[in-house]
Length: 167
Image (tube, rainbow, N blue to C red; front, side, top):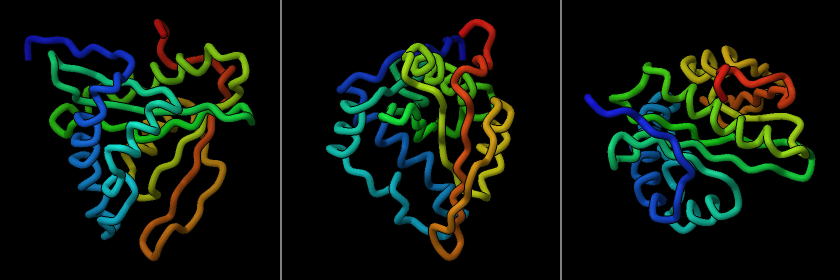
């Protein structure tokens, strides 16, 4: 490609690009579960903007194009909830999802009140489960969210150390 991917904080003007990428990235998930009404596919631009304002978002850019994103928010219990880790289909399996996960963890690990990271994924999403387990996340619960979907919650101690040596 000739360009390197850069990771930075998401800006308000990134919201539309993130939403379009999110819609593209969750098509396969919807197909796997036979449910096109999942939250990432029905989220509005205003809802996304509100989510970005209330938490922390990162984007990965290839030149000017937003090619990946992740969001998170810390709560009063010391949990940083990480969500919507997405990577453009043409750039998957090149470590970009792991880089974004490391970066969002590093952001929240710098907050003294954050004690743990938590995220959720569908039980059939082997790629996500492999990535999260490889980064030290362990399943803590699962919940049936529909006739074909079980949502798995995974957690990791924020003080356990970050995956990437340079993060």
